[in-house]
Image 1: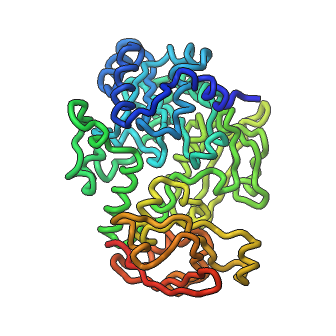
Image 2: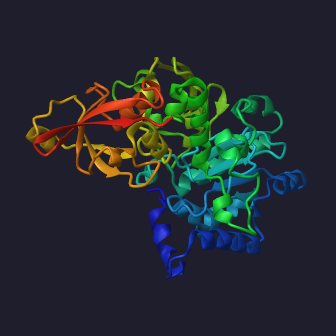
Length: 441
């Protein structure tokens, strides 16, 4: 068994403060702790890359949103707990970045709904690879582990040893020129933030969180184009979207395949290690996710090289149009913004089969229970319309075929005009109720 992170997390509980810290205290405490350690560059990318040039070591950058708790388990292991990992980290120049203010988005393209991400660079800023969580905060163990991180770091060191002979191949791992150079230049953020954290003032309020980059970018596209592309509705798809389940303890290795999926039809087998995808060296789950993010909405072919036993084999995985729409986006932090825009602040979950049967609601039709209704502006439009927790949404804008909250979010953003009054039908007990909720502009 690989070493998953839970045990190490619980072993560290005893050293945690017994009193609740404010967010401000957590941020300031993190800075004091890591600066006193003297092992990490803290919010100083320029200093880290200069040190890498002098030492000929690769650079490890940790993007860690403080004080998000969802990623503290991996963070504890990376920075304090795991002795074997600590030894490997000595081969890297390490830098900890706790806010995305001023972050060069041409270097850092990643799933912004993460709160912990690792980037591995050469001193000249050529990217070796990525590592990080992407899943629902309650399901992260299926995607990341200490063992998986260790093997990604080993893979980066091997690429570093071959550098610069492999530089041309690695250039494809870098993002294309971003829409905005840094987060604070995105219009929705420009009036609220600067390029640096304000440690002398309200430091928490001065920080641009990762998910805000995605939120602000989607707001920009919706304002400019009236809708979002599938790439921005379903960003950085999970590999299971194409039927590919990866082993979190290994380096991009197939753990299982969904029968009939694109990955299975391509001929991938359990135990295959993907060494390249579309010509890019693959170190981790996050690297696979990045390649999937680059595939057009219209579909395309992923050309993979896999290690199967002692053989290197070529495998083509063909994705058809609409492949992204199977992705679930309801778990994402950014889904709260989408709910505000299209659902008036409601959070919806599928009802059980027994409840569907008791209410005589047909299978395959919308039946989404309201689990939460926003109480404060601008998330309170559903509440003002009279929607209550426990109501069951069965029709939205005349549609009853949108069976997932994800499908409803996508429809509300791309098929309903901003500021449009949407008719909805709910079931409350034995009664049907009809309301109208206006989508956000």
